Image 1 (cartoon, rainbow, N blue to C red):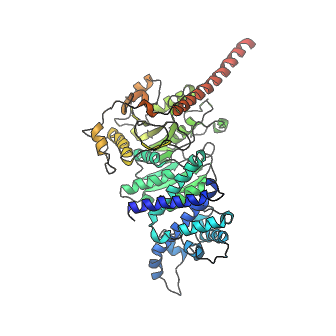
Image 2: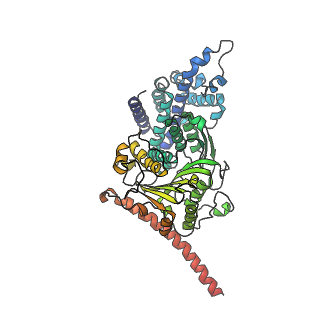
Length: 516
């Protein structure tokens, strides 16, 4: 289908599905998994029918096609009972919910790799809602191509995440953020790891990056993920399957568990971990090689995540991840860890992102990028800071994202810094000409600055891009007062936590003197 046609189909499908939910008694959480399961069944039927003629042409009535014949073509075998075209035409009196649950069981039985991935419980849905959903999705296998289902699944994930608010943000990272991370990390070939993988968006965008560079993602990438929440693991596995990918996604709490033996094992690490998590039992982590710079004393897990990402890289590996702004300036034990990290030479790029890009927080964030291959290069002693807070598209009052040309432009700043060729397929030519007319890297006030390790030390080992780039020209009124207040409150909370720790130390020291 043409892109414009597909865009219309995607928007129409979501609008229709959302209207059905609005007229039912279901919450977005209750509705999400059954709907995504139907998208998956439609995709499976589409791929099955695409190769069915070719497979059956090589078989006979005496020697009919087998599930293995389809799997040899990387296609799921779809029994008759699992086809939406069959279910939607069942007699009116049949138990439709039971029929869909049986369809799920049948496709899992024929494809054991789907075990425990697909949703159950269609009998719990209101009959009228389920019938209308089936009528909505049943025509899709004959109308769309395989790639279209991946886009539709992504759209539905994104829209459900937006409706669920904070809960949705725990499994979904907005595409423009993921795309920017991937474009800067450049995962051309190797092992990719996300220890907080949610619905698997990092992996999907890695695969798309490889395909944009005219290679096969299934041949070039090996995918490994961990996700704490049981209900989210199937979302990731379905997401991979819908994009023709496979990977090892494990349910695990990445603070305490290391199911992939991650230390030094991965070429690329990408993640959007939860921010400022407290109450992690650090005593259980003593001696764990995933934390080479020691335990932060503050009750905050940000520097546990940062160390995990660093430790998981091979000697030439790259990492890109989302981090709370406060981590760039955190003091005391966190500052000492940050200093050690900078002194390794692996810190490569920091990108400040403006507010309202995420469903969970309105606060600005920072993207961190590590590159262990910097050693021995002209970049060994430097870090590139980019302030992208003034670059965005305003979707509505509460949401922003990046345009494709903005993502490409920001990635091109990094490419110029690394001495790589720029890319202009997405239309970043004008932005490049405006800021780097000779296609060579140069510091641009308010946008980007390359700082030496000595300059970073002089700034107290801060990794806050704004300290280095200067202030970009911007309309003061753009920043909502509530956002500023939230940011100040985050800083106040961090300082308060440090004050509590310091008070405990002072009390202990004074008590020790008095006891003596």
